[in-house]
Image (cartoon, rainbow, N blue to C red):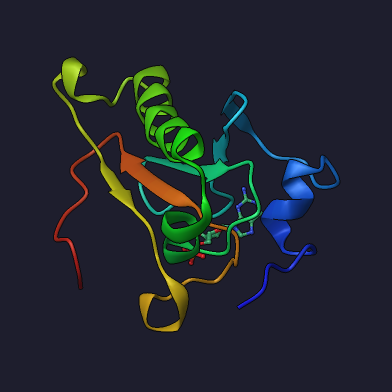
Length: 121
Ligand code: 5GP
């Protein structure tokens, strides 16, 4: 699947649509999900144009891959849900059709602020 420049997260990255920003650096943008499924529901997206985790794993540079993973940790710390707070959270990426991915720009969901329950329903 080729990258759709008009997907909603591409528009957020370009500043065409507002978001409730949590964190930003050279590699990631993080903002709150518009339809939160848990007390805390953040999204972390790479700044590069990657459709999903498979695309990212194959095509992103090592620097981008490290940047995304470190970005997730920075967001978790900022939201005070990281392991060192004693809380923790779930990081989840939906991938393509069977994974239930709706927005075709790679994103990790971070769920926390409460126990998030069973992994798959
Ligand atoms: P997916 O199903 O692709 O893994 O998740 C897409 C997520 O993006 C959903 O949880 C949905 O609520 C969120 N979302 C869709 N449109 C917007 C938007 O315009 N702003 C924000 N902040 N989140 C959105």
